Image 1: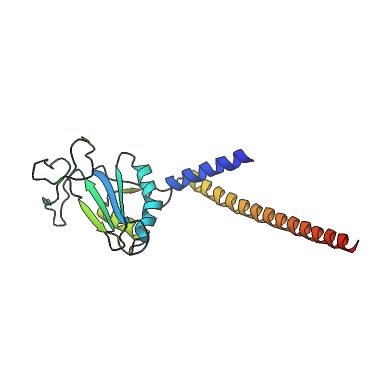
Image 2: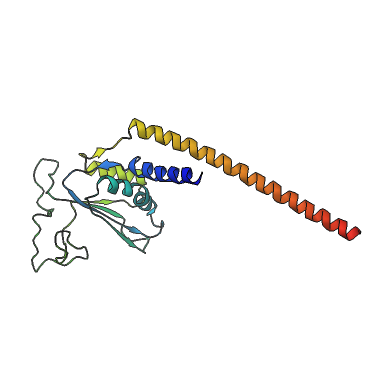
Length: 212
């Protein structure tokens, strides 16, 4: 029984990270994703925290080669931002090249460039001062709205749909959870009943002893 429960939990974890909102394959030009938000939910950071906990693991699972960095601060009034870095300079809506956004290939490491705390993935001895291609303000946004904003900036992303086998596994897992919860309720009620009976028996024995 223990092995069945352990396997069910492992399957549930695998299904959770493989399927659901955030399961998407990013375009190849995406080189890094980073987030900034508060350690608490106050100040409009609830959606950012939920996106980080529930959707970002799925994004990382589907894009293992894309670095994901998290920066959390303690100020409710601090920034709540989602940064997207790309290897190429994006085009503006009119089709022209936006040269104001540097790419990972064109960023020069001159003496005038201020250092960054983020290490360069290509050379850890060289600070990475690359600016993000997109910075999305995610304050007061629901986690689903943050995902929509990410997809709007990266329309080439491929949303991964669960396979028929995975859908059936999710149905089976839902049924297994319902049965497990029903079993827990029955066991809890049985234990409570046994405790009440034991307490009544103890009281009855006490009264008998006092009468004797």
